Each structure stands twice: as C-alpha cells, then as structure tokens.
Length: 201
Image (spheres, rainbow, N blue to C red):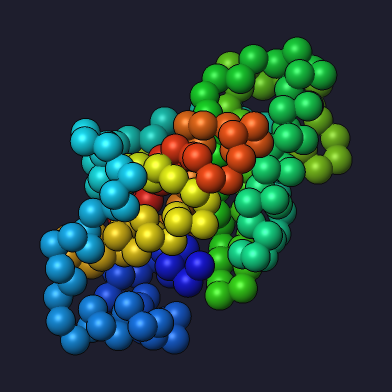
C-alpha cells in the first residue's frame, strides 16, 4: 500500500520513492531503469485497456461521504461507505449518473483519508444531513489507468503507474481516484474493473 500513499504526495515518482522509506522495488528502480514490462499492468489487463491515457475529468455533482481507513481493511471501509450512499440515493429518489468512486485525499503507510462518492444527475432538493454531503467531483487533466483483478492486486497496478510517471517525468497532484466500473459492493473484492485516475500538474 506504500505505492498508493506515494501517489498522493504530489511529486515525481523518483522523488516520492525516497519519501516512503525506500521499499525494495524503489531501491531497485533507483539503481537501474525499470524493465519495459514494469510500465504495464498485470496480465489480467485486456488489449486496448487505457494505461496512461490523457483525459479531462469533468466536474459532476456527487453525493459523498468523508472518512478515514487503514489499508488492512480498505475494501470493507470503502464498500461500507458506498452502500450507505446507495441507500441514500434510493431513499431520496435520486438518479445515479456514473460509476461510484473513491477520492483519496491523503495517505500514509498505514492508512488514508478519502471521499466515497457517487455522481448524480442533479443534486438533491433537500440537502442531506449527517455524514452525507453534496459536492462536485474532481476535474482537470488526468491520466487514466485500468486495473482488472482483485482489490489486493491493485498494488501491482500502482507500481506500474509509479514507474510510468517516473519514465514520463510527470508530476502528480495531491489526490488520485479509483472509479469502480464493476460495483465492489456486489461483485466482491476478487473480480473488479477499476479505472484509476491520476491528476497531473
């Protein structure tokens, strides 16, 4: 999970490899350039899957919940928030307008701060109370990467993303987004399709 925490620091991959106490993969890449295969996702990827595709994220109205979690229980924490949002959307008669997502706003070696969000066609007429709020999803220039497989194996995709940013000498902003093409609350942690968006400067 160091790789996800690294992406949130807002530095080039080469710089943030030092900032996360030099895991073994970072030490190796500092000595020699990563092999070409390191810039590609796991074998589960399908031909044509975007990996580093330039895209512009439009700001869309969302309902969201803020929270904190530990990497050991990240999947359960995130899916719990998404289930709460779905229940709220159904109760209020709102129309979802896109895939659910997690916006990671701060991370470290042990845990993270996040906003679980679901895009909606229009904000609710009555503002929500309690843990749920209304806002706008992140917008701007981003790179799109696709992950297929288990939630745990996302680390392999983040390692490939880190190497990609390093090779391209790109600088990431202080957040990244996981957009769930398959609903993690219903599909479980082992068979996911996740779009990872890294906002770049």
